[in-house]
Length: 376
Image (tube, rainbow, N blue to C red; front, top):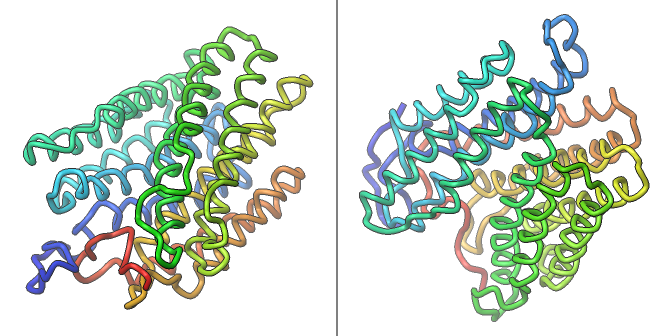
């Protein structure tokens, strides 16, 4: 349901209800799919009739879970670029329908359905910016088109593109998370300006350029050279992370989630580099990136949208920190090859997190969605 709020006072957007903004539909879908896709992989793959369960599992972690989170975040956050309220109503429903169709297509091996949600997302971002006359983000539009193409190729099994797709999402989280996390950490420092004062933004560009370089190098089979480039990407992001005001993260749960979520990205990239250098399996490193980096940041960012709003800023709801802790531990268990326990803990964490979202699915859409009042 969607309605027009009668109390649009500057602290809420005009729309209300589940279809009032994309995050209210897509973030819960991301949580549901985080549970369902792991359960189907761990305990139902053979009975589910999947022709290639490993490929399906990797695809759904990237394009199912990661895609749903992206589709909840970008068209909601676009309000800050365009000055318009977040998209709502039938356009949000269309996003969810396209995402659901892509999930069915992945199960049935229909690659033609895979790009649909990314193309719908690109259209939403483009149309909102066009109507507003500002806020065009060509990088995000290009990402949507490339991600849609990669998704279709993975479903069809045309050629192995999963490393490139993983690097694509890692680059997105460096670009978005690398700005968001230090911004919120800085904001929590008493008396600090809101700018990225403590960030080393040029390290982010080095990391992104390294990932762009690594994609064709790995595609050509030059694993050792690719490992070197990945090491540069990971180490620069680790140095960047260490330059942030991390003391702020010790004082508030939502900030802790953001800081720890981002940390998985450099750790995963360095682990991937080490695996390539020594000819070892890259599976643990990819799980550090996907379960830890992507899953951790998705949960940390979406937690802000459903957090309690107080006079001194956002505060975590009961259960959010516990859910994040379950996911955090599940990553280590997966890397240690303790698979059933890792899957159970991951699913429990996301299931609990889904419950914490329920109070935030009704009423007017808060403004802004991902931040609250500045701390004194």
